[in-house]
Length: 60
Image (tube, rainbow, N blue to C red; front, side, top):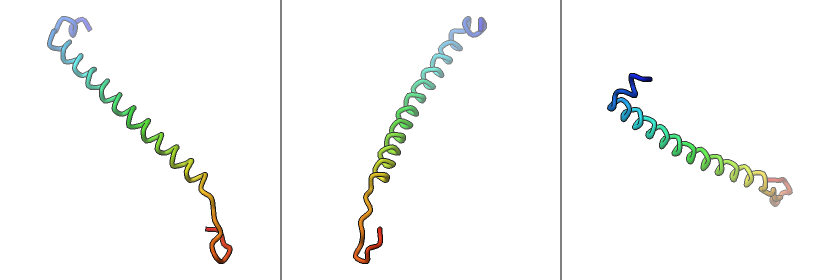
């Protein structure tokens, strides 16, 4: 690690890479949380659906 610390360009490059990874992680976390919320909503809607009898008395 001392070699990287002594190289200013290497230190800047690593800082840039870490910043990109951090931004990517934040975006992925947001996308995951949104998808999870939509899945939970859809699951609740499906479980709360009421079945109604049609004209011949069979459940739909």
